[in-house]
Amino acid sequence: MVRTLLVRGLLLGLLAGLVAGVFAFTVGEPRIDDAIALENAAAAHEHGAAAEPGAATHGHESGTHEQESGTHGKESGTHEHGEEVSRGTQKAGLFLATGLYGLAAGGVFALVFAGLRGRVGPRSDAALALAAAGTAFAAVIVVPFLKYPANPPAVGDPETINTRTLLYLAMIGVGLLSTAIAVTTARGVRGGPWARRPAAVLAFVVPVVVASLLLPAVDEVPDGFPATLLWQFRITSLGTQLVFWASFGTLFGWFCDRAARAPAPA
Image (cartoon, rainbow, N blue to C red; front, side, top):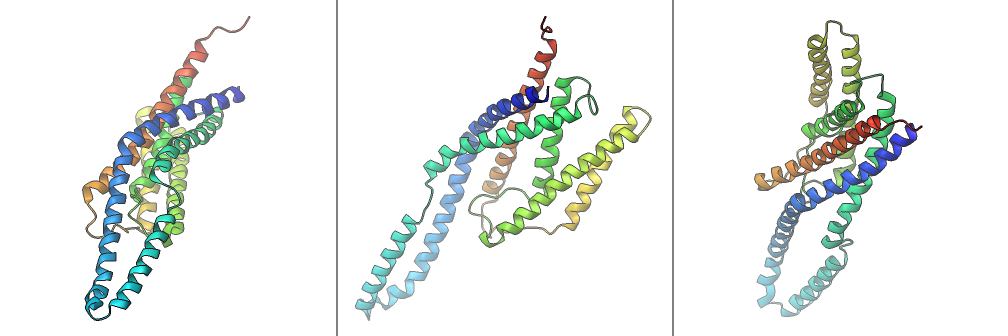
C-alpha cells in the first residue's frame, strides 16, 4: 500500500507542479521581468553617473577618453557574455523546476500520509489528504512567508544569501514543530472538537509567534523600490504555492477516494 501511495504522490505531485508552473509563468514571470528591468535601469544610471567625470575631462584629455571608452567597451562585452542563463532559458526551466518540486513534495507527502493514515486526522483518506495538504501549506509555506517573504531578483544582498537561507529553513522547522505540538495537544485534550480545535490552534500559533519575535529580521529592500511591484511578486509567489498544494491535495484526495470505492479484486 505504501508503494501505491508513493507512486500516486510522485505522479500527482509532478502534475500539480506543472499546474503551479503554468500559474507562475502566467502571473509571476511578468513581475520578475519588471524587477529585472528596474535593476538594469538602476545599474545603467549608476554607470552613467560614474562616467560623467570622464566626460568632463574629455575636452582636455581626448586620448585618455579614448582609452576609457575602449575599457568601457571591454567591460560591456564582459557583462554581456557574463550572463550565464538567458531569460528565455529561465522561463523554459521554470516548468522543470516546478515539476521537480512537485515530485519531491509529492513523494514526501505520500510517505507522511502513509504514516498518518488511520492514526491521526480524519478517517476518510480523501479528507485526510486535504487536511494534510492544507497543514503542509500552512506549516512549510505560510509560516516562513510571514517572517521572510519572497523578494524579486533585484532585491537582496548576494553576500547574505546563506544567512537568509538558514533563517528561512529555521522558520520551516518552526512550522513543522508547531504542527507536531498542535497535533499532540489536540490528541491529549478531552471534551470534544470544540475544546480540541482551539487548543490545537493555540499550540500552533504560540511557537510561531515566539520564533518570529526571536529570529532576526531581514530587510534588504532598497529605498525607492516600488512597493506595488514588491507585493505583487510576493503575493504571486505565495499564490504559486497555494495553487500547487490546493491542486495536489484535491487530486490526491480524489484518487484516494476513487481507490477506496473501487471493488476489491476477486
